[in-house]
Length: 294
Image (tube, rainbow, N blue to C red):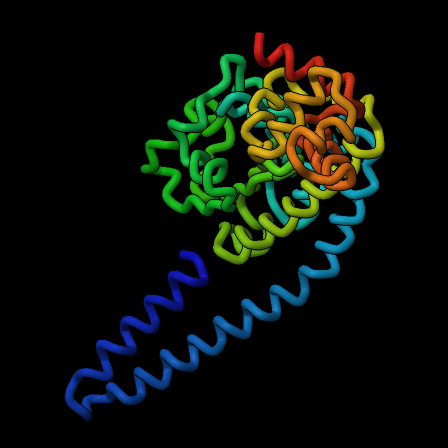
C-alpha cells in the first residue's frame, strides 16, 4: 500500500469513528490514528530530505553526457542509483514503445531479456497504461500490475512487475522518450513520492537531451528512425508560415516583408523552428520540409 493510500485510509477510519457516540474507547482509537498519520508524514518528509543529495548527484551524472548514445546508456544506470531495482529508457516512435537501454540490480541478463522482449515488433502505446504519459505529459504510477490488462504484453512476463512508475522525457518541445522504474529498494514498492521523483529526474533528462542536440549536430542522426516524425505538430502556425517561405529560398528580410513582421522576429521564428525540427541550418530545414510535403 502506498503512503498516500495509507493516509487516506487513516482519515476515512478516523472520520467514521468520530461520528460514533462518545465512549467505548473511540477517542483513544482516534488518537492512535492521528499519531499514525503524523508518523507517516514524518517518514515521508525524512525520506524526501535524505534522497535529495543522491538525486543531485545522479542528475549531474546525466547532464555530463556528451552524445545521445552516452545519455541513453547512462539514464537507466543513474535511475537505479536513485534506489530502484530495475529501470528502462525507451524512445517513442510513432506512438510505439521502442526500448533502448536497461539496468537491473540482478545483473545484465535480465536487462538484455527485457530489451529483447520489447521488440520488434514494438507495442502500440495507445493500448497500454503509457498512453496518458505521452498524451498528457504526466508521470504515471501503476499499482495493480497483477490484474491490469494494459501492461506491456512481452516485457511484463520478464520483469514480473506488480507496481511501477514511468515518466515522459520531453525535448524539442515534445515527448521523445519515457523512463520506467520498478520497486524502490528501501520500501519494496513504488508510490506517489517515487512517481514525482522520477518525473523530476526526467525533466532533467529532457534538459540534457536538448543540450546534447543543441551542441553536437552529429547526434541528431543517433535518434531512432521515426522518433522525429511528428516535428510538424510542434510548430506554431506562424512558424509553419516562416518555414514554407524559408523552404522556397526567401531571406529573413523577405519573409518578414511577406508576413508583416520584423526581420528580428523572423530570426527568432527561424531559430525556434530549426530547434523543433532537429536540424542545424536553413538548408536542412528546407530539405526536410520538402520531403514532408512530397
